[in-house]
Length: 420
Image (cartoon, rainbow, N blue to C red; front, side, top):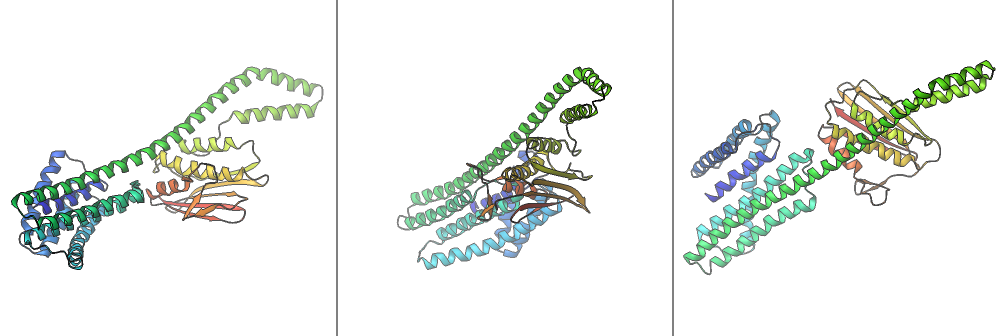
């Protein structure tokens, strides 16, 4: 019974941790869980493995579709998970049986043997469930590190070893009191594993929130600088408007005395002043426009050629925070590289639509090849982890986008394709 309760918990844990688009009252989920557990327990008493598989698969699909996510993709996930869970059950049974035989572990009491087998299988299935959740949620950046994931698996394995040790002990001291202590310990093992799972989930959520906070901070800083720059330009335009009569009078006087060259030079200076007060319009997307103005304003005094061509594209399907992540990091990397170049430095940005694809190309000149180690690009900045490219990849995964990086001796290119 304990095994069945934990088994159905594994199924519900999987459905709850992958993406949801249906939300019910908590009491509804508890009731459905109890009904599902009773049905699975009743069917398992018949001892028909195929019937168990059919019941679990149909039950998971029905519960998942009506209470968690009704999209076709997730129905496939539920079917795949149920079948793989059943396969995991068979494999775990075989592995544990072989391990008991190979390690010469003798459990004489058939009841104890069944308890060891069932709980061990459930813990292995729990590891499978957690890995399945991590795999499906990889695009949503379920931010558990490799070490954290390994820690979770190791804890499950330690639980198995501890439980085998308990059963070895109980065979020596097999009083009724020892049996009660054994059952309490087995129950505590399951409770601790569930608790640890929620702890790891909390770590994952914390990591996700920290990353989003950093991205929102980056976006808010860009917006602040943008509007602060607008305010400065507004003040400058007021000053220019105040002095415009004097400027026009000076130009007229220069023409009157036939000093044409000085008049033209003076007029060009006025044009430059007016151009500096203009906020450039690159695209209809407000956030991207802010980013481009900020980044290109930063290098306007540098000897860097900037070519920016943006077609008639709609970026509204991309979240503002992801636009910031993608374009701010791409441009920061390009600017960092071109600032090291004395002459013939350039940055080219092309954004356009091709069939049903959004295509983004950015290239820049370089003098040093990028550092590529352990399948990752390393930043040349001091005390910098070089996470820009990795953050871009994670943002693109949300939209099934791909990124291709290529570089030569004097040029670095990034090509991004996102289905629309």
